Length: 299
Ligand code: C2E
Ligand code: MG
Ligand code: MG
Ligand code: MG
Image 1 (tube, rainbow, N blue to C red):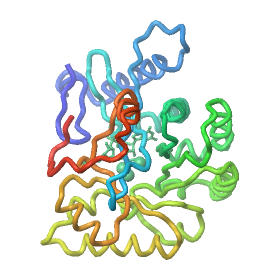
Image 2 (image 1 turned 60 degrees about the vertical axis):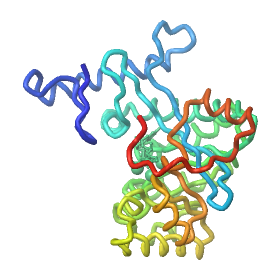
Image 3 (image 1 turned 120 degrees about the horizontal axis):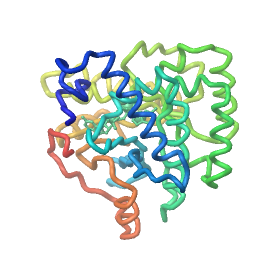
Image 4 (image 1 turned 180 degrees about the vertical axis):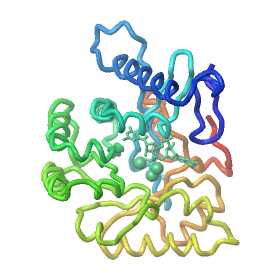
């Protein structure tokens, strides 16, 4: 059976049975099957192993849900839940991310068009996907096929997109902006966070990385000051900010005091299945009071 150690320590088998290479090969094979389980069309016999779940983004002043971030989940039939931190890098290394990412976009867009309220939907895009010259075309086709209003779609990119070919990157930014979709810079403050990226690229939003919130306590005033500075920088450049990973009331109070208007985190809600999103929207529940303090993932 699957074993879960700490973060990133997932193993199919204990290490004395299979060496790392073999484990990696099994993971690749399993991922290929998982993609086939959702990608082989309505005639597929396979039980779908992949699903998208949706985490609310909440406006802090009135607890109103303004949108959702789509996150991928892989439930292996015998090995259980395999986290994105394990399978996304494998998908990137093998090129499977192109298929996986296209599926994620399509599924999230389909689900969002079924919502009774036209809220925003954010989808994570790997730098490998983004670097592919067809990417803007894939987004355009998906918008056509699903009828999703481009203004509702926000693509979450990380700084690693700037490691790729500059011309391809610039062309992709232009093409995506002309489609009318929104762009967000995810995990801001980790990596190199070169400010020249912000000058060059047309981001609508910065997502402040969870690590700043994690260490945002009374004893660590610097993290809170950095959050305030990032929010101030984004404001000055006309960008929105979302602070990620808010788990507890005291964290929320600190980040709100630093100017945060939008928050995502377990304090408000974990990612939800589409059926739950639909139920809540049908019930008119577009406000979520915070549920914390919660220090542990409710998985
Ligand atoms: P991310 O885009 O920065 O997503 C936020 C992660 O933080 C998610 O983890 C989410 O479940 C988790 N999270 C949300 N609130 C809290 C909180 O209050 N506390 C803590 N500790 N965690 C919180 P998840 O779903 O495991 O995804 C991890 C990463 O995997 C994502 O980071 C993203 O980089 C990648 N990922 C997930 N789904 C996709 C996808 O469909 N496509 C691509 N390319 N990457 C994905
Ligand atoms: Mg994200
Ligand atoms: Mg993030
Ligand atoms: Mg992240």
